[in-house]
Amino acid sequence: MVKGRHMKRSVLLSWITVGFVYFLMFWGNLVSATGSGLACPDWPLCHGTVLPPPRPDIILEWGHRTLAAIAGVLILTLIFQVFKSKDASTAPLKRAGRWLIILLFVQVLLGGTTVLLGLSPIVSTIHLIIATVVFSGLIAVAVAATWGKGLVLHNSFKVQRLAKAGLIALIVQVALGAMVRHNGFGLSCSRFPNCLESFLPIPLNPGTALAFTHRWWGVLLLGIFIHLPLAARKTAPRLRGASITLAILAVAQVLLGIATVHTGLHTHMRATHAAVGYAIWGILFFIALRSGSFRFLWDASVDHRSHPGKGKAVHV
Image (tube, rainbow, N blue to C red; front, side, top):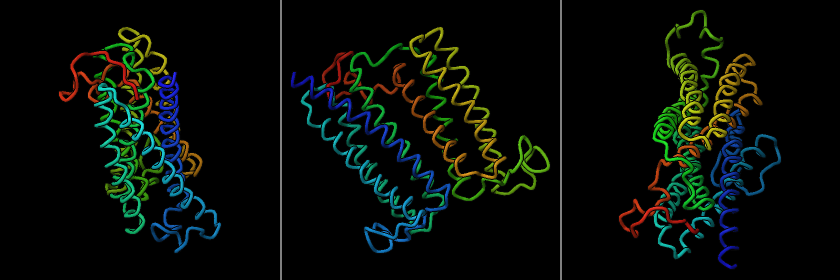
């Protein structure tokens, strides 16, 4: 019973951490959308204190840092739970835990560097990409802790290939979106479907090139997201619900992108656009895991340092 209670606590903590990091990413985008990134011009303090003036932009930025600190505590607590386990099948998760600690440390430094460099677009983009990788690692831990040896619903190579291709294409889209946002290129292509006066980004400059590529790369991604439920229906029926949800969100995301441009980058539209984008990533990574991808993250049988044998439950 003790072990059972321990498992339940670990599973609950893992999903709470996933949800909290998702909310943190959404809050970070809200900070960016409202132009509050430099409301606290110093780091790690805010205007030289831990109790800065309660101005709306300061509340957003200082709140983001506070939430990030709480997320760090949750992540470290979860990793401690993983390392506390004596089960040999947790070896891959322990390796993932080490990487999460490193990435968490780098992420904290990048957060400070972003402020001290005046919101450098390149540093801000890297900051978001690493946050996405951390988010993915936490999903892997949560899924492994929840389902153990029953993690793989269907070992579908077709779904695996589509999910992996989608993740690669989507991380490119995340980087493009971050560069558009942090460089202030959101309205460089201020019409749809035309960029400006014509379909092509003319005059061609960094702003129109990035905005045009981000826009139509997102539309092209729809092909993968719509194909995924069709592939799941034949080879991974228990993943069809998640795949259909993903396809619906992908269509909604494109429509939100169009609406964001037509509303002149309305703050609520931008924040919702980002939230849906992070949800798409999380669901796609979940589908990839449950179709049998990235076994090195949770299956001890592919780790040469652990005992052989497939199908072991992961006890965190």
